[in-house]
Amino acid sequence: MVYMKTMHKVNLNGLDLNLLPPLEALLRRKNVTLAARDAGMSQPAMSRALGRLRAIFEDPLLVRGAKGLVLTPKALDLAMSLRPALERLRDVFQRPDFDPATAQRTIRFASSDVNNTLIFPKLLQNLAQEAPGIDLSCEPYGPDLLARMASGDLDFAFALDSSPLPTGAKSLYLAQDELALVMRRTHPLAQHDWSLADYGRVPHILIRILNDGVTDLEAVLALHGIQRRILWSTSHFLAALAAVSATDAVTTVSRAFASRFADQFDLILRDPPLENRSLGIVLVMSQTSGHDPLLSWVAEQVKRAAMEVYRS
Image 1 (tube, rainbow, N blue to C red):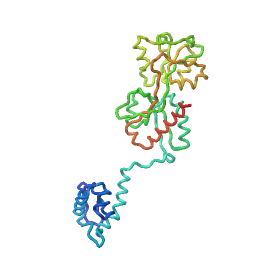
Image 2 (cartoon, one colour):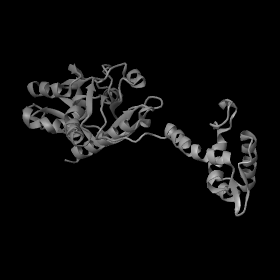
Image 3 (spheres, rainbow, N blue to C red):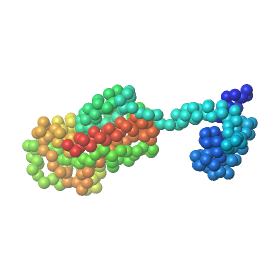
Image 4 (cartoon, helix red, strand yellow):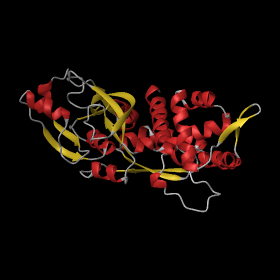
């Protein structure tokens, strides 16, 4: 704390800023015992702090009066300047208030057309009412996904709860989905009781999210010595459904998404012959995103929209 009435400059590097709370309490309470209680200190510690403050300001600060301790003229000046200075200091370290109604910003997501179709219409509807200045941008996944999130080029990425998280990232659970085996309604095996072996008998449409062709289903089939033919691979789930509707190929995708277009493409959904068909949907954010009040609020709005959609 720099005493404004002095004629010399004080070296801030040599000051103990831990003395500011006891100084404020002493000037306000004018009582060592009460000041110690307010500052969460013992009385001996407060007495020692008072001694150090007297040395720093070269003034007794508190002196005996007719009815107890009173402030010296220098202490009176300090009391007038210290409180606003402390308020400004608190503002430096305090998280700023966030008002969604006045916020203006573009939030960027890595997202597939499953999330774009299911979650974002409801999210946009909610944001139009509560945060009209917030815009959203959905971008494709890619091998540089982690680098884009680390650099701040992406704020969020949708993923499955089985996906490993990058170092320092955290995820927010959104909703529960499951896999469905999808084929055209007139498919030769539409009424067949499928087994894993059947996956090797028909062509498949593969959705490549990260363009690596590696899926959990591939790992399960490999364990059973089954290799499937990939008739076509695409990064678009809707295109996969359209292809399935026109061929004898099948695809294994989100049940919630496929159900949305089953009538349009004349599709049938079956339970795939897998022990685990669960798809837990999560929103991944970087470590720094969690400290941004706007991004934290948007993440909660994404969860709200997902819960509304997946419950319907």
